[in-house]
Length: 132
Image (cartoon, rainbow, N blue to C red; front, side, top):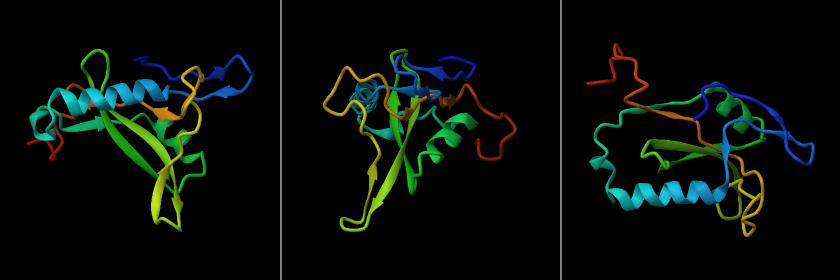
């Protein structure tokens, strides 16, 4: 995980968003979370996630109706909260994930799945009244 948020342009000259991962990697992380323990309560050390401001700003700038957070485990065994924008579908009454780039195309460069959250512990506020 990079400690600094950087922006730039991808090969097509389109502004690249900060702190995103490809869909295929997000799927692997989510599968690892479900497979590793199969039960959320077994991740008893996990209390919270620190979410970078840039992740929230960028997902909200996507003209979302809401956001959804998926839990996963990265390649280093660190729990992650992956944030995805959603749009409300009034017909189905479901908030649909706004994942289009990379769906059915494993070679796509960018999916707007934000992943640079950090788990608590280790990124905790030791004086928080929520940590018991």
